[in-house]
Length: 71
Image (cartoon, rainbow, N blue to C red):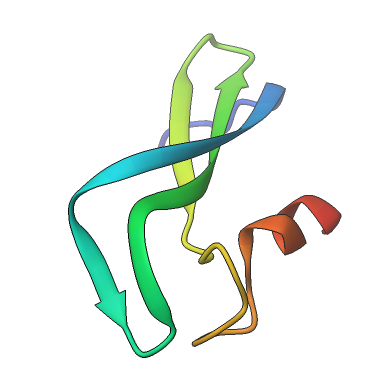
């Protein structure tokens, strides 16, 4: 069983990715996906990336990108 290595560095990055085609819903049309990415490095130097799945605004779900920063 592998041993756990403690995180030594955490970085949060907010990005805006252009979509190949506009995404249309009853809430409007979006041409880009706003997302928060997290990069974690551990004491062994291993790096992992993750993404917060929150939307730009609290429409369909209560989580939203600006709320991620507040948390």
